Every structure is written in C-alpha cells, then in structure tokens.
Length: 242
Ligand code: G3P
Ligand code: CA
Image (cartoon, rainbow, N blue to C red; front, side, top):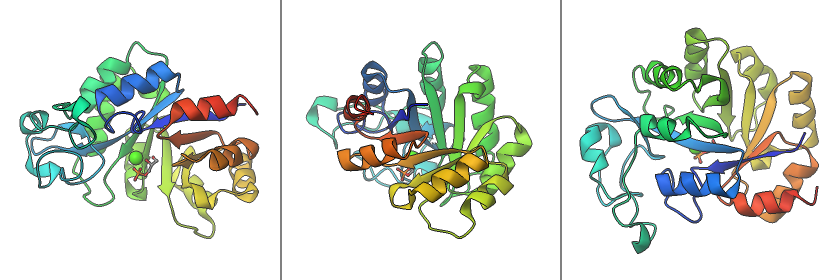
C-alpha cells in the first residue's frame, strides 16, 4: 500500500490555510485526502480555522467563539497570506462538505477542542457528515482523548484518530484502548517500532507535518499510511520514487 498524501489545511503553502482556494488546489494536485480544523462560532456553527483566535489568519482579533458565523464570514482570511487572496472568507464545515460531496477525496476533520472543549462539537460535526453522506470517508481526529471517546459513543463505526506530539510510553495501546482507528503523530515520533506496533493493532499511522523532502522519504521508506503536508504536489512527486 502506498503512503497517502493528505493536504494539511489544504495546499496551505500556496493558498491561505483552511480556505476554499487551498482545498481546491489540493484537489487539483491529486491529494488523496484533505485535513482541516474545526472550531465553533458564537452561534454554534462549525467553522474551519486552526487557531482559537482569529488574529493570525484574519484582519481581526479575538476568539472565534465570540464571533457569529455571519461576522466570521465577513472577515478577510486571505490578505495575511498574500494580496492575491484578499477577502477570501472563512468557511463553515457545511460549505466544505458540500464541496467535497461529489469528489473522490478522503477527509480528515480535526476537532480543535483540546484548548476550548466546545459543547456538542462532536454531535454537530457528525450531523453534517450524515447529511452529506461523508461519514464513511472521513476520519475524525483530536488531541483531546475524551472527544475521541465521545465520538465513539455517537457512532462506533466512524474512523477516529488520536493526535499527539508526545512520546508517551504505551501510546499505541492507549490509542487502541480509546477505540481509535488511527494514530496521528508528529514526525519526530516516527520510527520502525511505532510502525510495527500500529500494524499489530491494525491501526493506521499518519504523520504530520511533512514538508521537507528528507522527511517525506523517511515516511515512504517506513510505509506510514499517510502524511499530512502543506505541499501535496511535492509529496506526490517524491512518492513516485518509492
Ligand atoms: O492533523 C495533523 C496536524 O494538523 C495537527 O496539528 O497544529 O497543524 O493542527 P496542527
Ligand atoms: Ca490540524
């Protein structure tokens, strides 16, 4: 099995992260998956933005959860990246799923609930996945193990992944105990032992964030199941050599 290439926040090296231009570009580049980050607006709408605040990636300041969805839509989420993307909006998870519905691409929705544990985030995301019939080609991931467990209670068949950057003893057993189908690890945790342990537990192992060619080669050599990268075009190109 080849290592799949997931576009991290879309093709986020060439377009503003978590926006439609970044997703469209990733799709056109041939990425097998798209990763994105979900937070909740003040009025409870799941929206795609990485940080808990809007400061880094928009022209405003403050917490995402203090803006209504309508207010968030009116922010400029492109100019910070380049003039070319001026007034690119923040989009909702629903807009993203409507776009993905007819496309042959896997999704990884990261619930950004390890800093703010948004109430009912899991339920809201799940309802949208059902509405767009995308539950079976989506992996739900989180750094928050309690959220993985909550999702398992909503639908035990949905693919979930525990995210971690920590070198923890017994990590693979812990993730398996949560009922996670996959482990998403920071690249410095990758070695042949963790690959082997995941294989034995029948868990997928995906690695973030792989932007350097040397790291891509390591992931391909060790046969990670997938990588998350800001540069899917380069990752796909490099993969041909393996
Ligand atoms: O899902 C992999 C990766 O996106 C996790 O870290 O900070 O980029 O969301 P972060
Ligand atoms: Ca993420």
